[in-house]
Image 1: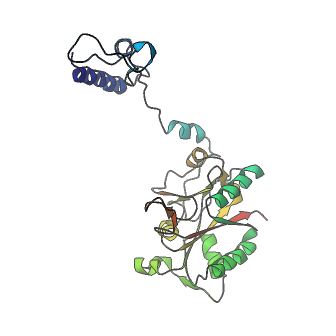
Image 2: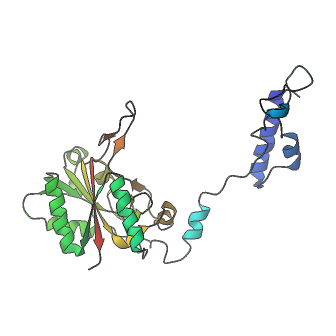
Image 3: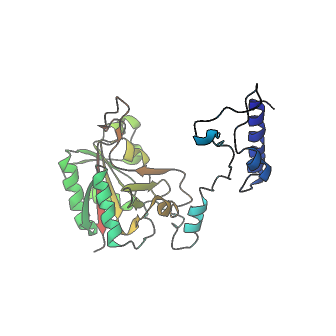
Length: 275
């Protein structure tokens, strides 16, 4: 059998094996595919670069079924406490994880490593004052917030010096003219300092991607250890999930990092501790 024909036969057997859902290939494939087929002319294979003249193993000789990427999430999200409730209204935070202080510390450290800023606040009143300081610090005047009730309460308490743009009547061009967008995040991921925003919870996607400054309100009780933990808690009603790790950045041009090319230049997280 020619080399190309042999490989096609092996690939055909692999596809059939995967279609049957078996976890290992047939025994005849393992025995027959342990070394590459010989050349078209001549009766023996030339010695390989390994000692003793043996041929290198064929990468197609061992086959296993691909793992199910959703299996871990299903295992982690089977109980009522570990999954988000179906959101009847918008603006909800995730179900609290009761994470340890160590998890929160790691989250803030990873936030800083990713280039984001973080301010720990206690209660809504302190969060409002911190929000005003943050917006003033980046010289933001035109501000747009998501429809989350907490965001709307804090924005309307800002007072003079800021122009609040109505989200429901804002055109795309007007959104690009805004200086800052304010949203909540449903989850934080400690191992990477990542924020998770669910579309079923609030209207926040464009606000988190367009204005040059993004301010995020996150409950300290909604920090998960890993991406898998966070995804296991995401509401099934969310048709889009936005993952944010630090300000927008790219290295497309000569591998030189540039911040804010296609998203916010500044990311500031207000981490809300309970009063």
